[in-house]
Length: 454
Image (cartoon, rainbow, N blue to C red):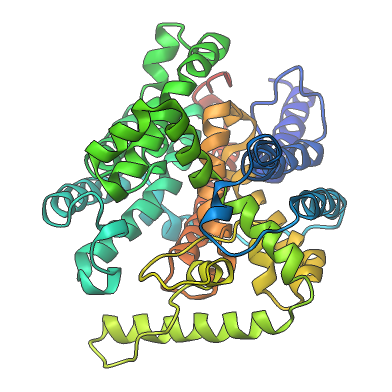
């Protein structure tokens, strides 16, 4: 290869690595890498808002909100949806602000979670923990069984495994699409799918298991030409069945199979139960906008509660006698914002935007809160890039995002699920970028052909 051609190739490769190493820019996406990143981040933000705010708002206007028959507030939903639009505008403006360069963790550290052989050990361990906990604790212990601190180390390991493996799915699928250890990582994803499948603790576990299986069968689907628009159309056709399955799993874990089937056999009862389950995010946000927009004291109570939970969990790990916190989580605090009655071990996540009312500044916290969201969402971009923009994996990223931000202040606690999710996303982004940069530094003749993004 001539010197000029080598220089052109190096320049093109450097451009593709900018902002999470985008090496698969399709001809239709003739945008600068920063524009691609902003588009992805805005798309993820808008998708979350559409699913959890806009659609429920429309349903409330047409059919009412069944939660109003259970909880105290009768909020103004119009104020809630206007706050969503305002937040979206501020988030869009925040996209234009300068960004700090992501400080990468050495690949020797991130590889302990995402390199092929260590991740196989982790996946096999997670499968064993998932199967054993399903036999000993049951599939519904997180909703109807003992508290997590009372079930011992097995419960903690299960929750930790589900958090880390959720991030591992998008990391390994990106690596498969980039041509890194394709068969090995596909086998790992198959194990992760099986582990989630044998112990479904929540409705979201169904989608996570499905995405792991889709990632595991990527090479097979390509060989059968079952990719791109064809798989997208078929998956959209199957979407209603997936929604019904998600409802069934989530509801049956709480009230039992027979009662859930009875609800689903009645169309009106099914719709009301689904709407009630689906309404919490918009209901919580509208309540906070209506009642707590200038409630600056709520943040102080929340910070004290998170600190108490952190010390309690540290004490539980080391066998110390520490008094259990009164609330236990931001979701629990949010439940008592909505409810005027007591119910043990019940929480209601305030949602991505509802969470900011537990931060200093209450409703005005949105002006700095959007930068926290921008950083978290940017981690998904650095892991996924343009190679994983199909609706199924955008849906998975919304689920993973929701576990990070629906009660974001909880993530300050290093022993919380939110902190573990954010840490795994950060390590996953570091790993993906490091591997792509490492491949760039290899002489061209030793680089294997890369797959086409589909």
